[in-house]
Image (cartoon, rainbow, N blue to C red; front, side, top):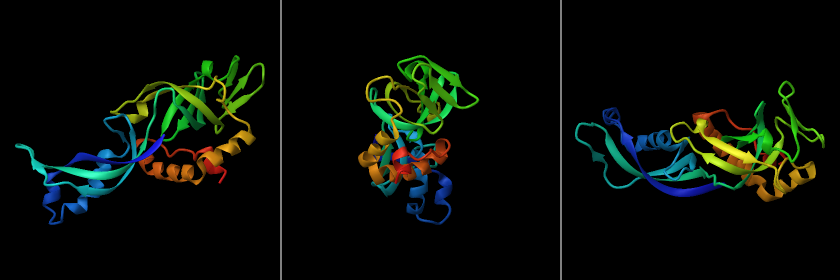
Length: 218
């Protein structure tokens, strides 16, 4: 779900940055972060954080545009989603359609028909979803393991991306406390560190997420 890669891309350096009497290298970090963080790249991978920005060669000037177009290389922490991938997150909202689950920096819909293998009752006032037969409950903050069944990233506004989940298959759903503790051994400290890293990009595209359940057990 998370990857650290080295990428190359082009940033636009406005003309006013060349009038301040400073080296362009002093502006590369901020301009690169503004250009890439909190957005999807060409492969629909969400860029959380970038660092180690380095210029590549000389910049280009386009006729009629006073800006410099500079090729840069940088390291990036990416949040990647694939169709049919199993993901983990916490319920962030309960509404008439089901529950929204925070997975990394994104919100995904767990439709009421895809939560349990039984009819469910939704109590919006109590922010709770209850199975009619088993009495099992899902509420805000509940940990959920689910599979992505539909994925439509919105490159212009990541907050409008549409992600559909199901938790009806074996091994999915909201586990017991005992099962939840097993997640810690799978992710450990890395989950908490990645959550902290993603918080910077969250400020660009939405509220800072609740730490993953594995992080909250540390």
